[in-house]
Length: 151
Image (cartoon, rainbow, N blue to C red; front, side, top):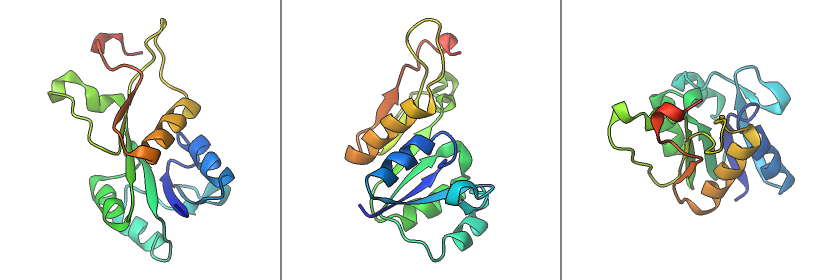
């Protein structure tokens, strides 16, 4: 792996972007404001994202799902030759949505099992996302049941 597209590179996946960079992997980071050497684009706008990434290349991707539209995510999947890790929030595990299915290359976020329950930190999320990037195995970070225990 020579380059990884990271959407969430200045937020929840910032520690992952830093670790990849420390390993000598080029990070193509996306942020709305173009901070810290990232590409400035709103990843919800698939046309703008496609245009902003026209000259970029990457081997794999890590995507914080709330930061993209479905159309943008489809573009990223199609443009990524390797693994495309999707980091989903706990909302995807809402029992009202039906049976929880966690596809390959997906990190499902939950909350800590210890009391008091809390959301996971960017470092915790990034470590788990890097594990999924390494092997593609679907994972749940923390717990997503019982639903009424979420913070």
